[in-house]
Image (spheres, rainbow, N blue to C red):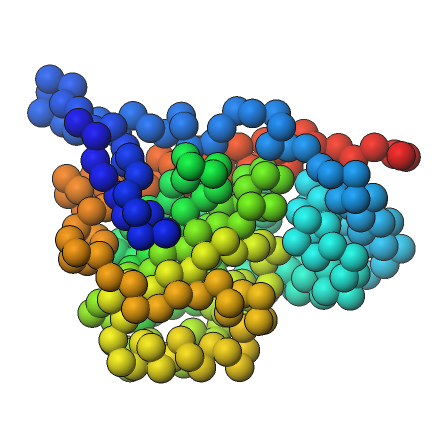
Length: 298
């Protein structure tokens, strides 16, 4: 049968096809559709191409900076345009970030860390999917699934921060996705802000979420309570205006909490489906990063 999911704009799109394979198991057969095999999604506009080459040259002239892949130069060009100071700030930041958390930025490491993140906080991420209506990605999370008590060791902190970094890769698999921006849908019911340290929230925001080069199509908060609404209003002070304007609060869905649509038929099965999708997105992302080359000259 075809499941139905709430979309970022409050509507319904078709969910994963679910059928019984005569063994009593549910089979989710949409994994191959999560990353469209359309070469046009890897095309740059003439302006983006020029800016990509300028970014590559600027990094080459900075001996203290590690050289980055051509794909990453193009991703920065799409997001930052000609704001070279912002671009170099991002590059320097993530160079230090990777050193601090001992990240190699490889497919194998990404697969390990996103799986470890799902194991560490199994109720945090509900879904990663492709919005078939416009070809952009949808990232759905449950704030109540953020478990501060799970962060017991430095290794756990590395899983969280590294996992968030690779999660950002997952919704930025090609240039079309980066340019289109992502839909972020956040379930708030049951979230107790007092159970998450301010330092942890700040760490996630300042070290990954606010710096990773991406754009947002829409950010919707479902079922927020009073304190969550207040916390979101405070974001105006730290979130760039172009992002804050994409935020919509007070969203409701008549069927209840969003996990009732995504944690099916069981939480374990849903997380297995989630991991399948994330693995495929990472595989395609790193395939593009390794194969894409900018021209040596225009």
